[in-house]
Length: 227
Picture 1 (cartoon, one colour):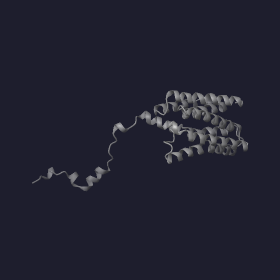
Picture 2 (spheres, one colour):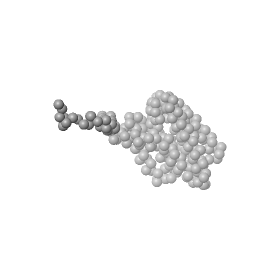
Picture 3 (cartoon, rainbow, N blue to C red):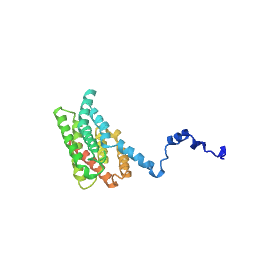
Picture 4 (cartoon, one colour):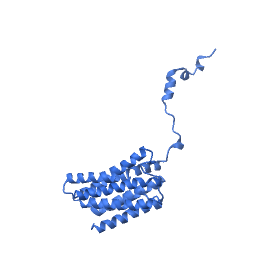
């Protein structure tokens, strides 16, 4: 005859089974990514080309704008062609399984998004010219188109960093218009370059090349237009 003290009451009651089922299984430490990798992922997302284009275009649109309404209108028009359309193309490509991720990490998948993005940027330039858009925005669109064209050519044989290139161009453009107050934007360029290397999306050479190319090309075009 079994003594009462030997009975395992937890296993004998349905409530105990439900309690054990409600407790989530611990996540193995081996499956958790290091903290610096998680931080790098957030930095990469926040400082991605599509994300940084919004504050950059808004600041350019408000530079010596005739009115708030005009600045917002031209900013919306520019963002539609420079960011919303191209990023929408990428999202559809990911959804259809034609692109691996929103970063378009595989070099062989970049031709389609690059081509669509360049066409969209050119259409944005036409729209700004036809509507007599502000000069700073038109120059920004020209820089975007030329940087994109050169990077697309390089991407055919080498995976240059678009994140570093986009932020390098943005920092250069804003510094040209607003002066030294925008120099801290270059610190963000260092940060996003670090994140891309940590995530193993690019090598150090690829982020440096993307940064220097966009900075040099942006500065040259701005100088040609008298900025």
